[in-house]
Length: 256
Figure 1 (cartoon, rainbow, N blue to C red):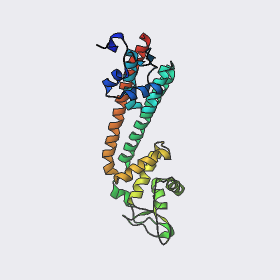
Figure 2 (tube, one colour; figure 1 turned 90 degrees about the vertical axis):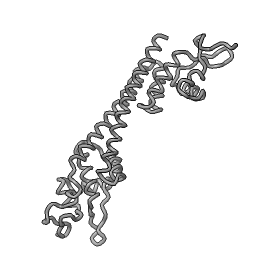
Figure 3 (spheres, rainbow, N blue to C red; figure 1 turned 30 degrees about the vertical axis):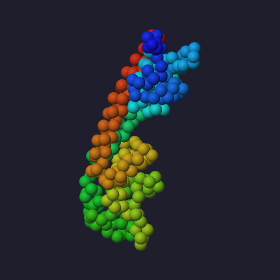
Figure 4 (cartoon, rainbow, N blue to C red; figure 1 turned 60 degrees about the horizontal axis):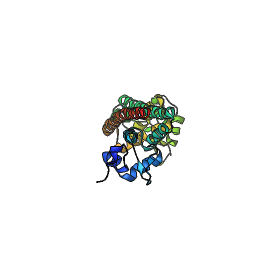
């Protein structure tokens, strides 16, 4: 009868793979990428893994959901190369990214909360406002760039820069060529304005505006924001689980 490799403290790739439903090729790939420490070889050339590799694989798989494949691999490679400080720096960066995402979500939620209802947003508020050339702007009509900029307390040049960045897409009046902001445009402008006041860069705001447009407005976006919030919470828990598994691996290395 063949000898059980675990009885001698040596494990085969299949022994590591079986616990996590992986293929033996995946185990070899993880080792070659540095996520697992190099395995010893038997006299016949087969890989011989140990309890240290078991802990390393558990740590790597626990790091994946929170950090992603590339960063999780880099963290494990740094640990396996005795560069623990580099591993800790990478872990800190993932936590910092999560914190930035939380701040962005909070800013979006605050911006949506501060926005007026769509009916009020589209209205000019008074019948005395005028567009280019003195044309009256009546309540419920679209806005020209001047009255919109005045309402927000910004310069028309700012609105034009947001348009160049793709954040706002006003149509052009076919007769005058002036920019005309309809209800959806005004919504986008107000959302950009709120986020800019919160210190967000234009390149950070662009994907959020895209989400608002894809959702068809602010109301459907509430569900998307809830999903976003849930994903951030899941990432936070994944980061904690990964940290615990990584700590267990570090302790195993100290004992090894």
